[in-house]
Image (cartoon, rainbow, N blue to C red; front, side, top):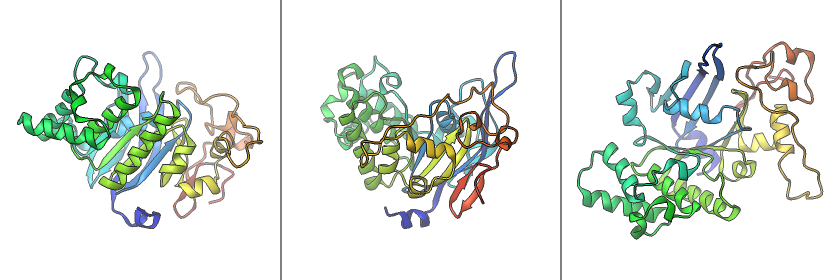
Length: 329
């Protein structure tokens, strides 16, 4: 699907001003997400990028309402095809998960049950969410799904430990597609896989996107994957939006210093003699956030204002947003 078609496609998922806190015993709440917004259109791939601890997975778990017991969504709205998911009861939300919005979890070996066969685990999603009780129909659908992701159907009777890392990840993708969802959340699906297997998984996701018309939220650290797969990019830092724009804009006209530093730290294959840059320090702890801009302690261009006043997310140009005091908008 071309970019201009994406821009005209209907919106499937709209997240507006979403904020999430984690409650910590004996202390004030940690503000893991603050005022995050984005839209996902039909057939679009939106990349969520940032270092570990920047809030990417928390954002996805908030959308799915799968936060741990100490997590609380404090404000905002999540609309899927016009329905506010945050207003649904748990039973109604459970009907949305997997059937409409599915998730490929990070680390397939941890997500799969080691004492149940792959076919049984994929079949369970079909039975639970489509209410199919005919075992022959379930078995047929499992075989179709495994074939779709490039696994021989006869291997459905095997256990996770009998699969390679790449095959386990393919099985997780098959499970996510079991109920024909409109949106798939991929939380770093190539973590811990070697380069060749990563390429195969990414190629598979891209092929499935084109074939099935999937909309994908792709969580990753890899800017190469973002450049290859994504239509739009949401750069997160310390639980807030640093920059949000099309992939072309983010790579060719980045406005936030954090985005620029991430791009400088990414190897440029056209200039192999260039020295890689690194960002000193580390993302802030949620229970010890700095005053002002959360990136200011690490920012190479920070001014006095950055250390005392938190920047607002402002529109640089149509479709391009950044939160930095040095950005004109």
